[in-house]
Image (cartoon, rainbow, N blue to C red; front, top):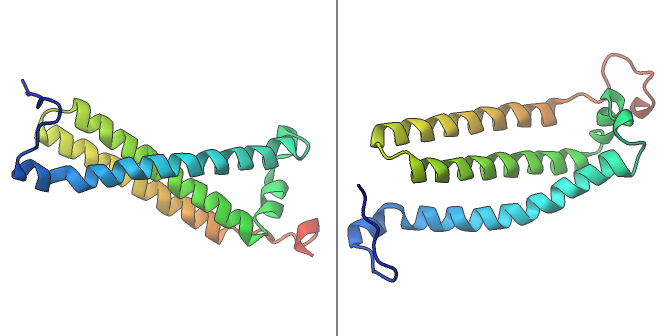
Length: 143
């Protein structure tokens, strides 16, 4: 069973070198990315669902028209990156809290890292390589 240090106990130098800065920057990232994600997500929902004709208007043409602008590609790409890293960092914290065996802890953290990395690569590729004007030039936003 693990023991927990008493509050205000100065950690040993070995413990300070181990995870101190990583945990601090992870904590700061969660707060900053959380605020940015609230702004990005509510902006995304407003533009996609409230400002237009609602959910029935969201189709290929809507996304292609929106992504014809670099602004919306950056917006959606930033939202993708922040959300995936934010979620991965949260999962890492849960693994640190509940996976006591070092081998299991390490394996779970690697699985989280790989999942986040693969999804970031695929999502970024989709946002950057998406062709808003496919082979059908008759679409109104391609002229």
